[in-house]
Length: 101
Ligand code: SF4
Ligand code: SF4
Image (cartoon, rainbow, N blue to C red; front, side):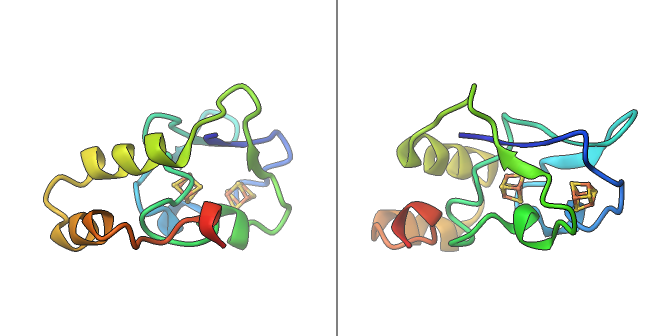
């Protein structure tokens, strides 16, 4: 399930540098997440990095984009084809994921 930013966003910018996939950018009105680049931080963290820093709790799961851990880790690999560390962790089935907490 990709994460989305609600209209409660106050444009503080805290989330943007935290995303391991550069999925967050400044939109016309509020910050936005590219759902095709969001892995729910699977492969990098055991929590949602944007949600962890957002001061108004407006980074929330998008109920219209429910995705499995498998889909999300495959996305992480395709977004980071040269990340050997990530590839090794995936091959060992030992990578950070909020599904495994
Ligand atoms: Fe980026 Fe993780 Fe937030 Fe998705 S959940 S937008 S991957 S920081
Ligand atoms: Fe908006 Fe929250 Fe990101 Fe700040 S951290 S820009 S309030 S989504």
